Length: 281
Image 1 (cartoon, rainbow, N blue to C red):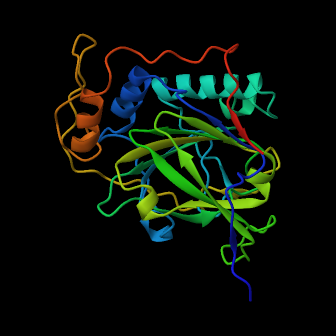
Image 2 (image 1 turned 180 degrees about the vertical axis):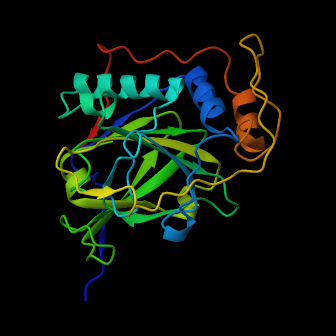
């Protein structure tokens, strides 16, 4: 049996937009999401990733079914603003169902917070094609990382045969879109050595109208109860982030240090007329 082929060619349909977020946006998102009172989900039983997770929008079960009768979780303000910007960028690029990434009842956001010693991981997978639309957008915060893509020729099963692999770099404060084959032909995952530092990611998806459904009584959605001290949110006049080192609060000791020493000022957003983002054919 032949070895899988590693290639430097990027998956077709993968689009990378560097420096999509400003330093200020990154800081505001970290302060907003890494709160001890956030809706952290208890998904440890899945053993899919060692990240802490939050989800906003329609409630999705572990089986990737829309939970009917469960109230949607609204995105907090900075997250909603980012979702709108991601949707605008998708529309500017002419990507399908761009509006659904941020607007309406079918916009879904998952937050992953990687902070474990030894690195963060996410097992290789393909986002459900029965539940989510053909375009997925993701923003990376707090650290550079990498992701491996696995060409399974559209097979979404975990043990599917891998024909080729590609490692893609995910710069800090970047946005990437998975469209076309990179969305529907390749699986993707993160190894611990690819995410050695504290990292926050926000992934935006649109839920299909024909997505499978389940009832609230059958779905098992568990929230974690965090026994930590609430963070002190700084006023707009304070230059640095909160100093508390509480897990999920005040951004945490590692990210607080990163944000405190971030370059002064705001990184200017790339204007629409400037150079186009990197397309990986």
